[in-house]
Amino acid sequence: MRSSAQRNRRDLPVRSPPTNLIARSLRDLADLSSRRLEFPAAHSMGQLSIRGEFNIDAVPAILGPARGTVGVPFGKTVILRVDANCSDLSPPRTARS
Image (tube, rainbow, N blue to C red; front, side, top):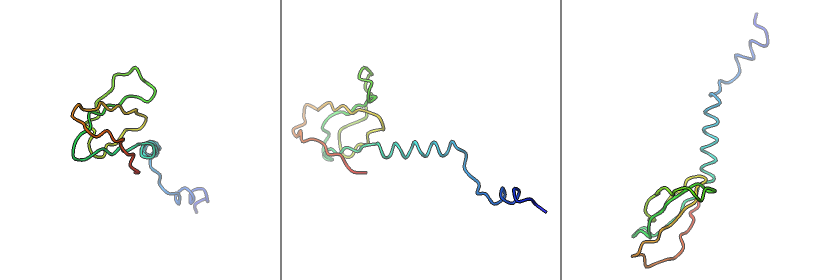
């Protein structure tokens, strides 16, 4: 006859390793904290770069052209270098995810 402890261990659901939970939590946090900027789809307003939110001395990394919907990674500041041919300087909208 099995003890109640043995029966209870057998009835418990199998759980994923904690690393999966941590990875999923970080991904969910990034999804909640990320931003999407919308620029005109027909033309680029210029070049987008990013750097750490509180690291103003860091060399910015190029994100790509300011065209269409652009995702901004978690914890990053966006820098827009306006193209010389850009004729419309309407501010970009922040899209809801």
